Amino acid sequence: MTARQVKPGIFWAGALDWDRRLFDELIPLPDGTSYNSYLIKGSEKTALIDTVDPTKEHVLINNLQSLKIDKIDYIIANHAEQDHSGALPTILALYPDAKIVTNSKCASILKELLLLEDKQFIEVNDGESLSLGDKNLEFIFAPWVHWPETMFTYLIEDAILFSCDLFGAHLATSDLFVKDRMKTALSAKRYYAEIMMPFRKNIKKHLEKLGEFKLEIIAPSHGPLYNKPELIIDAYKEWVADEVQNEVVIFYVSMHGSTKRMVDFLTDVLIEKGISVKLFNLSRSDIGELAMALVDAATLVVAAPTVLAGPHPSAVYAAYLANALRPKLKYISIIGSYSWGGKTVETLTAMLSNLKAEIIDPVYIKGHPKSNDFESLRFLADEIHNKHNL
Ligand code: FEO
Image (cartoon, rainbow, N blue to C red; front, top):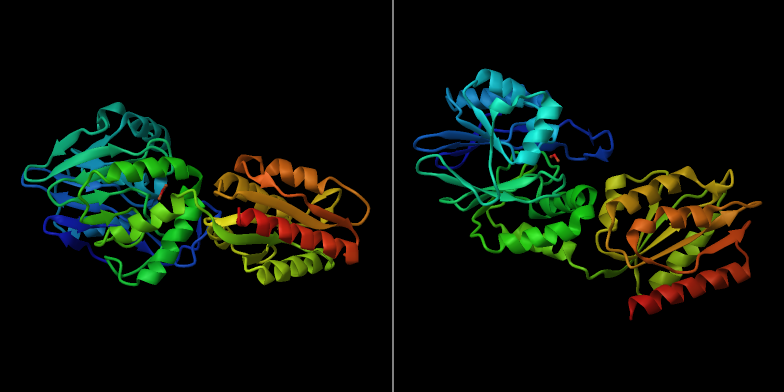
């Protein structure tokens, strides 16, 4: 891979990672990812915006060599996480005159993570600009996308927003700009769900602020660039909005079939009522799919049997995840079956407390479901239907 021109004097110099299948030892990457680094050659100064994951630093170095870059004046750090900062020490060793330009919070994190020194940094404030000669960069602080130090860099003359992780997609593609809109939209939604969703309220404010800027290109830190920025801006506006869809997500695990029988019955009744259902078997599902389903849904039902007096561990994992991701769910319920006792409902309810969602009365039964249990599930479906139609 060699560097590619975004516009005259502006280059993508990052790395595609086609083979990576897991991020943070947690997030599945079915389509790999990219670490986007950008080089801007002004008439007087040269700036590199972010670096790459340390496993791909040789690719960044090759790209800089292919562009015949013998001097970098500034390395802009929009975000301290290592998939963008990890190659900084190597790049600084190759370009010793370069200064890292970032906000004070990011500088302080970078010093801790990469053992860098004060003298290597130039700290900037929100709204401050930096001249490269005929090109000028403006720094826009955007905390919590998805760390506290994150910021955007805006190239004023070309109306390009280097948006850090925001608007990113874990997608390795040879397309510099979005070409396959459907694929990119799905990857971007998955990325939003896994990484950005807990910060929905902050993102709403950032979107409002970005409304003040002319945007011709959005250049995120992962995935292809947007030369039609409204594609991703409009999608984000929908994802962060408070409105939910008439949709129930069911996370389930079943050991001997009782909980599964309840899930199947509830699913059928919900579908009869015209409610969309997304069903996930927790023993087999990719957690990115679970997260994505939570972006728009009104209701989550966790269906789990009791194991050793508490919820099945797969349900504990999924509940922990849902609670951490803070989707805009309005309602939650729990269903399942036990054999002799336990505190499954109490434990799962307590685990979902971040969500501020209304708990609809659980249906938690002893043994295999009987006719009165099916009636209770029908009542639960009625409740969900009524609440969705409020
Ligand atoms: Fe792509 Fe938060 O790093």
